[in-house]
Image (tube, rainbow, N blue to C red):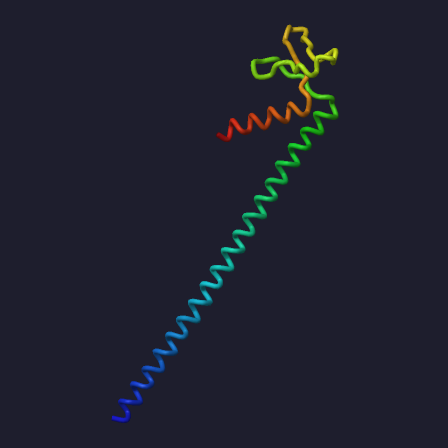
Length: 123
């Protein structure tokens, strides 16, 4: 009888240790999972920041290039009409030897058109 009581006590103690081990192991695994999720989230934000900076710097670079050249000439179309605010510039509008009509686009307006194009493409 004493042996049976000792076996039950040992069995109870083993179950208790097993449950403690399961709880500790579960806490350990969930802590690792939580830490990994936080790390992945930080990495995603870091890559998004890098991508946004690259896009911004590219836009600034194109605008600086256009500014260095005093703007660019583009074909006159329904979308791109001569800028009335540049009417005091003698060569705002030019005609190529083949008869194509070109108009001067300022760096600001070029940037505006690029952003409009991007907004239309992403829709």
